[in-house]
Image (cartoon, rainbow, N blue to C red):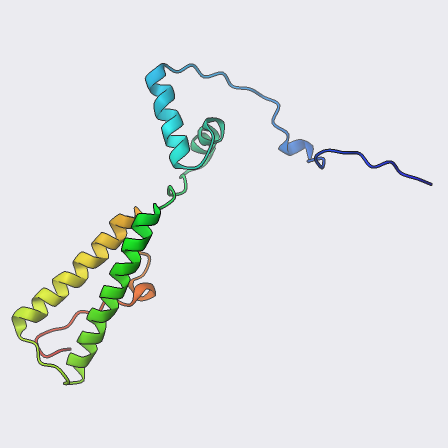
Length: 140
């Protein structure tokens, strides 16, 4: 027996078919804002509205490539700082209290900039990105 294949898209379950329409009126400024926000999230306006209405929280917008490159450079700088700190811990280098204070402030500033570049409130874990160790005047 010969079965004729249907062309087109595979069938989806009835629960996934969208057949209801919601009409929403917006003015030009609202439309422009909606489109801009949807574009930032790489979504069309309909999907953006659906996600906003049905999800508790939208995913973060994509991070610009320039921010990703700056973030990677900050990771390299942070790693170099950590190597310097380790050499202090092993007594290979002497740092004054003043420089240790500046060193810790620099590490904190780097972490803050990294978070801002990625659009995050705080990094998930500092250990994932080279660690964030603090040192006192004895290198501990």
